[in-house]
Image (tube, rainbow, N blue to C red; front, top):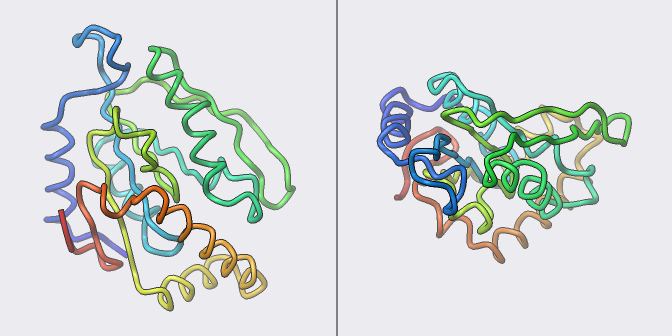
Length: 199
């Protein structure tokens, strides 16, 4: 997926036009410097592509929740919890965030990565726009695509050996989204081609 330039420009303008919300409500308004953008949606929908395009335009860091899940079996909820505890809560308090990247091949955590309080931060992945981010996110984008197309894209990326893992993950993420009502809460919804389907 490549998001059409007009759609991408509109999203970037919306972010620039928003008021920073990090650090959190306890900090005086002049100290709030970071605009948080969350890109969420099921596996294979195009989240990473959109997040990369947004980060390029905003000249900022991307936190990928793929780095925060503990493998296939852990499901998306664990990534959302680590995002909150390792990245967002420190930023809310005016401190840099820090997370440890999970190495899917080695099956263990690897190096630590810092998340500085820059003017913009993009977070992407299943769980990136869980309810916990609502007080701080200036834009929550939902990306969706047909299930068959998502499976095709993801198998193309991860290999046919991942099929059973992917099917289980898709069931887990469906439960997560039903609980979080992420699609309904999103500020903007895009389809798998990058076109706007709802606001």
